[in-house]
Image (cartoon, rainbow, N blue to C red; front, top):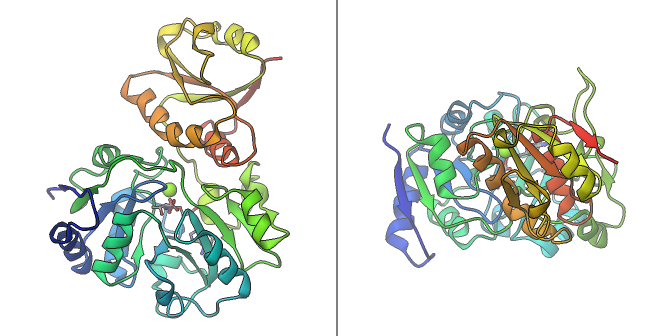
Length: 343
Ligand code: TXA
Ligand code: MG
């Protein structure tokens, strides 16, 4: 299959939007920009189209998809009930990088929910994502548009790299502004529970909901055979081919540790101002306290490591506050939970 790359700069380009919508309405797959990461979209109500997503990504069959909507009017048809917490979250964070798990309506195909009684819903804020959903006139199922297990794509080029020849179209809407995926919160547990940290922070969720539990898989490793609250948590994720390790300790002790690796094979991901402590090549992720910039740069940096042929990536471990909780969550998985304490 030939993959068409279509640049769309504004939601006013209705002719171009119509072409993307046509692909989706006729059961095809289209890579779309969102504010978090690029999504691999199909008509969420078309079971056959949704199945193609799993094939293109090599995605495990039991990992359910997020359904994307463009307005609140679409929600009631997709879920069994809208509890007051969902209303409060939607008022506060939609459109935006938040996914809410709710009891699913019967119209949600099994291919989307993978046999669960629930469905994940998100209303993206990216103007082109929003315009494509409206133009298609159907909700869109969309996981991140990477090959399963690889770092999520934050540019159309990343999507092309993973999906060329496997999908009908990629809409290039520029680089994603958040850079990590949406926050996933379930309202189907005893109390609201954070399943995946993302662009909306835990602190922000607590401001709206009061108490929010944090699933232990957010920062912990599941024991083998343990059943996760979110199927996606059990899979290896976000990993480049290079071996990734998180390093916790002072800059001096990190630099000493880095010397135990062959410099030419080893890329350092560090914070602004730390580069000169290393003889290796480095990528700076922003200043140590600037979590938003870490999020914008992390997936690109992991992809760059492979593009440039590095065998090892050593990452200065971020904090766990604000959006850094999401960055840390992704890095722990990219590193298969390998953390080196250098103090
Ligand atoms: O920002 C995002 O959320 C992006 C963009 C494209 O919107 N999408 C995305 O989708 O990250 P994906 O498929 O890569 O991640 C969805 C996560 C997975 O971990 C999946 O297991 C979880 O959401 N999920 C989906 N439906 C669920 C459900 N009913 N219950 C629990 N977890 C669910
Ligand atoms: Mg993903």
